[in-house]
Image 1 (cartoon, rainbow, N blue to C red):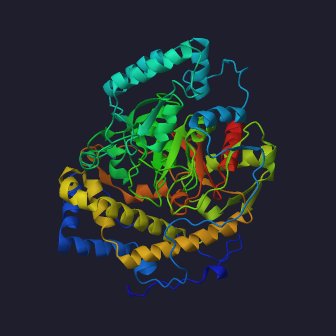
Image 2 (spheres, rainbow, N blue to C red; image 1 turned 90 degrees about the horizontal axis):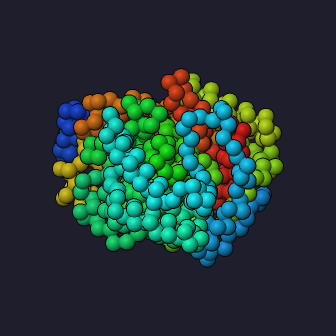
Image 3 (cartoon, rainbow, N blue to C red; image 1 turned 120 degrees about the vertical axis):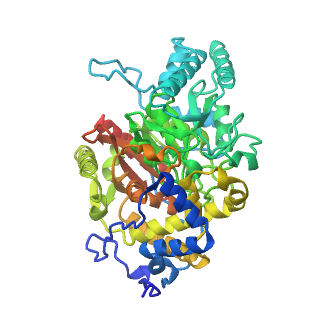
Length: 590
């Protein structure tokens, strides 16, 4: 019976309208939570040839891999990289950036896109804790209220406090006080001379430990990877930030090899959520999200392979953005998953996301990516065009989340509709369960092919239990399963492009639940909890599997005070539309 694969209808016979008869399948994850000694035994069993083969067969069968992939009949050809339709579309109220502009020129030009906030005054109702924005730092430096050196000293003091805090926050894997103070001193001198490089000059920005940034090694959250892959220079995005004068303040913690959603790292500690230090921060860009949430930095860089920027951003109550696949250059980023993993930005506001995005934007040099359209930046002050947007919503999918998440997201959606008059268009997205599994197969095969040799020879004995389990699962997929996963990519691209013929944006919650408590039994070896992971990743995978741009913004809290995020997914290259819509929503909810 298990050899009977599903026969899929040709995509041209599929209906994505609200009247579609396509079934919504709720996630069925048949892998029990494993932790501690049980996790160590489970990882050992999977690494044993006979036992591991039997166990993996049972897991695959229980999770419908044979039906959806191994023996499936799919007409569409495989799509190995995101391939977007070659079509032009208009985005209103934008400015165009010349592709050959320097990072400094782009960081200066983006100031024309920002709202006027010179008249902002502190009010009685303003909260005691307010995150400083990039322009807050810039204005304070220009006025002489504070210097970059003083900010760097306060930053280092705050990091030390987070280390001494009980429980320890574990936000950073590495930071170098001497290097940070040296950068800050150079920035302070520039301001004294009246020659700041850009609005980013002197602004502290942290970097996920998956991105090359001297003088630090790039560990990928492991204890071994930096020993087999040496860092010889800055990644392209770091070079661009340095050119703008940003102070790079260290490498943030992450889930080991980016293969989990909790941010619990058995080597560098579990990154704690600043809203409740007994709860997870999300992963895998856990430290980057926590650094912004705690107010240590106005912006950080992350890498998003399966919601790894947007998920922790939502759980920690900040903004998280990933552009279209190929919009940013990935030179100097760990090649963990090259078709689904993309650079992303976490920040305290949409404005700060836009500033950093403008500084580092520049198309990928990969031959797999067609030359993107012109770089367009939104004029955030102009909100008139928002009323012309149509927001697509698949209600069965949208509603498949915790009550608090659903309530907050509907409230935000209703405010957008009420304030701007946007039309909410009901649609159907078929085969979401297939997409979830196809993404897992794809990211698994790519990660396995990138590091399996070094992992087996050097990393196996030095890795946590959850990473070992994941790498065993990744190595179990056959070429046929991988190929059919890419055929599903063709199908999903068709479904999404059909929806984008009618709508500008797809709207969803960012996660299916809020941050949950950290279990003490997971701290030493990590944990495998596919059930909670599936809830956290439920809405994010199209951004990675199909390379679509997406952004999350905070829209509320649950009864425990944990943040909730709303996500907008755009058509390819529509970053300007997403950023303007997110900023307008942020304003309505302020």
